[in-house]
Length: 180
Image 1: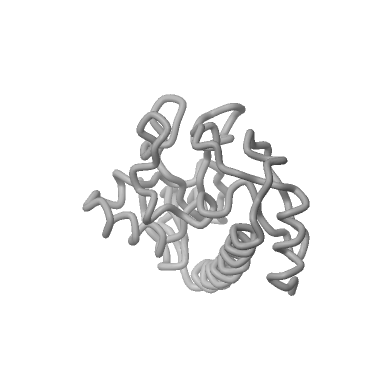
Image 2: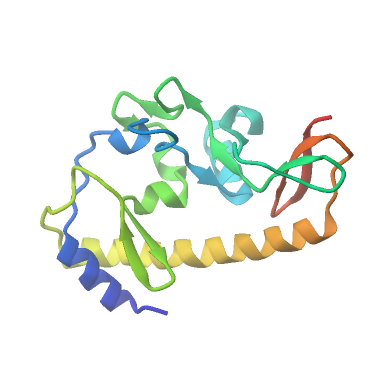
């Protein structure tokens, strides 16, 4: 596993300062604003907003079919309204304190020990060592949370079934029939 110091140095070499433009929360190409969230992240947003689950997320749009003809997706994504995340108010995130991991670490993500960087207007800007270390810490926390979620989803897939012809989500909490 990459160290916080090495990751922080990589982030500093890229440079980043959020410009608060909100572009990351808007559609700039198909599904570019698709924010996958885990059940614990949804529950944090519920706690912060008081909104119901189905007002916050929708099933991830890509599905697979099982032997019975059930259509399954393996996660959730934040609802979108028109060309943006439903929680973007002009250029302000209305769930900032409860925002998902992907939002907390954008434009960075980890693929094992490789730092991936998404397009962003704030790239190339000077960043302090303290801020780079903070981002690096969040990236490593996100990586751990995502690995734990992936493990729980695998277990849920092994023990869950949906009725024949149904549509549903299998996430770390188990199977949820959406239609059928």
